[in-house]
Image 1 (cartoon, rainbow, N blue to C red):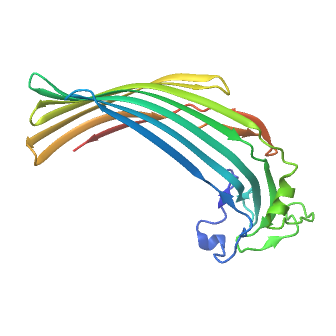
Image 2 (cartoon, rainbow, N blue to C red; image 1 turned 90 degrees about the vertical axis):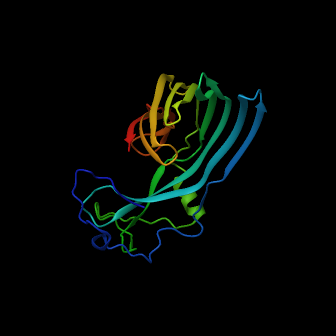
Image 3 (tube, rainbow, N blue to C red; image 1 turned 30 degrees about the vertical axis):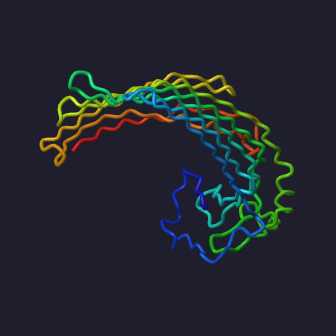
Amino acid sequence: MFFHSDRATPLTFKNIDELGLNYKASFTSNDVTIRNPRFNLQAQMVYKLSPEWTSQTVLSRGSIKSDGIYTYIWDFLGGVDYFSQMFHNENFTTNTTDIQQNFNGDFKIGKMRNRLLVGLDAYHRVNIDNGSGWEVGRLVKPSGEVLDTDPGSGDPFVPVDLSMAAIDNLLAGSGVNNATNKNTSYAAYASDVLNITPGLMAMVSLRADYFNAESDDFNQWALSPKFGLVYQPVVGKVSIFASYMNAFINVAPSALYDDNGDPTGEFRTFKPEHANQWEGV
C-alpha cells in the first residue's frame, strides 16, 4: 500500500506507469504475516405469544483479533522518488456482546393491517490494544530497489531484514500501547407498516440510541426517524414509492500515538457518522 502523505506537495506521478511500480517486486516476505481470526456465536429464542404477536430474543457474542506485522509504504517528504516503509506490531482485540428483544405484531385496526416491530437493544464493546508503535524499517523505491543511504540526509541507512525476528527487534523500542476502551449503547425502536388501502401503504419508524464511552467519558443521545409511502395504481403490478431515512453509526474509538509514532495508551472517541437519504420512483 502506497500513501502520499505530504498533501502540500503536488504528486510527481498521476498513474501507475508514472510511479514506475514493479509488479513483480515484493516489499514483504512469507515470514512477515498477520492473522485476523474471528469468532461469532448467536442464540435465538422465538415464542408465539398469540396468533398476532411473536417474541424474539437474540443473544450474540463476537471476538475479532488482529495479530502480526502490519506494514505500508509512506511518502514522508512528497515530490521524491523513494518511500519510507513503516512497520507496526498489530495486537488488537475487539470483544462484543449484544442482546436484542423484539416483539413482532401483525394485526388489524378496523380494516387497516398493521405490521409492528417494537424492540430494545443493548450492545457492549471492549477494545484491547497491545500493539507497538510505528518505525521506519526500510527506504524503498517503487521499482523494488532498497536504499542503503538516506537521500534526504546522505546518512547511511541499514534496511531491516524481512524476518519476524528482525522486525521484532526494530519495534522493541517503540513502546506498547496497553490501552483498553469500553463503550456501551442502549437503544429502543419501533416501526409500523400500515395498509391504509389495498393499494396504499405507509411506514413510520423511530430509533432512540444512547451511547457511552468509558475511556474519555463521552456520551450522547441520537434519534433516527424513517418514513415511507407505497402506492400501487395497479395492485400487485405497478408501484410508486417515496421514502426518507435518517441513519447513524457509532464510530469505533481510535488508539492515539505521539508525534514519534509511539503509543500513548489512550483512546479517542469520535462523534457518530450521520446520513440522510431520500428516495422515490
